[in-house]
Image (cartoon, rainbow, N blue to C red):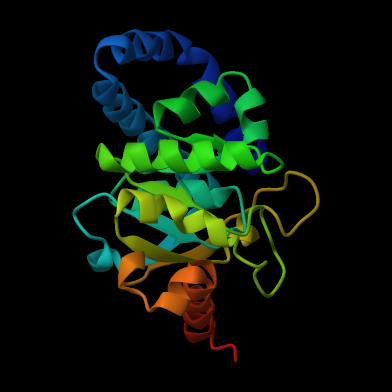
Amino acid sequence: MRSVLVLGFLFLFLVVMIPVHLILLLIGRFNPELRYRIGNAIVYWAFRFELFQTQAKVEVKGTENIPKEPVLFVSNHRSYYDVLVIHTTSTKRPGFVAKKEMEKFPLLNWWMKDICCVFLDREDIRSGVEMVKNGARLIKSGHSMVICPEGTRNQKPDMLPFHEGSLKMAERADCPVVPVTLIDTDQLLEVRPGFDIRKGKVKVIYGKPFYIKDLPKEQRKKAGAYVQGIIRDTIKKETGQG
């Protein structure tokens, strides 16, 4: 029943809000920043409602670590719910780096663009360069971004390797990187076969920010592994594993 309610709300939201999105497109022609602000506010409350429907209890730690300026959040990736959790708890209402396939979903892709999402074709090197350039441009204009360097959702005990090029956006924008640790978001959806949404408790922990340029030279070359190490240590501390 919970899955039906969540999917029903998503469908109604996408259809009923078509006129609103068209207005946002018109606004964006004259004032892109206003379009993003309105779009983010609408999506924020839609995500809050979806979490309420799911009966997800979200424990948040470390928001005091998030700087006032725009940042690149770098997170592990366990569930579709990661997007909802980060967007509603990070205080930034950030955009996301999404796989290119998501751009093909009608209506949903409109709203992704309304909240500053950028799309990445993982098979195309040129697409990666464009993603870095577009993401850095958005950060410089005042919008925080989120990237999940594993490249896909992963429910295994350990994370997949972080792609090293994933932090180039922060390097180009010269912005702080904030490690984000997500725990048990997959319990809401992915751990069971099919689209079976269950209520549950999840944690999101925001780590201390850093600039890539401040890392030692060898760590700068492997910034992805450096952030992954922070997230792995946080998971061990929070779960008592290891």
